[in-house]
Amino acid sequence: MKKSKTTKAAKCLSKTIRLYIFKSNKHIYAQIIDDKNEKILTSCSTISKNIKQLANCDTAKQVGKNIATKLKDQGIKNIVFDRGKHKYHGQVKALAEAARLEGICF
Image 1: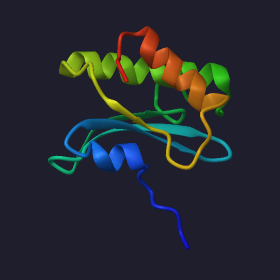
Image 2: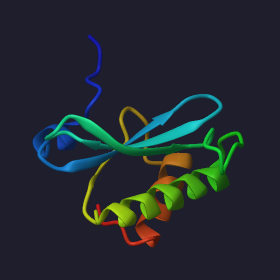
Image 3: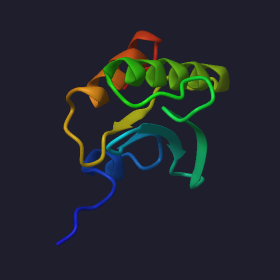
Image 4: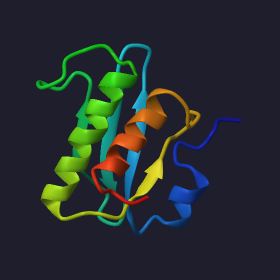
């Protein structure tokens, strides 16, 4: 049986905005998804023009800071963190902590 792409917390709070993390072998991607309107508000990744590096903890921190500043520009401070199938460890943890340090609450 396949795992669901959205976690239980994200399903329960589907009226809110969530930060979804996708990780491949080389890159890490962060998307801000508005489930109420079914739209992607903004995104950032390690293949963005201003980062362009392979994923490690340092570049994950840069992605977290970048996505947090984009959220602040849109006036969003409270979100739901959706790590998908990945453990809260390493790059995912670095991205989340960098976003929290920029003032995003989740």
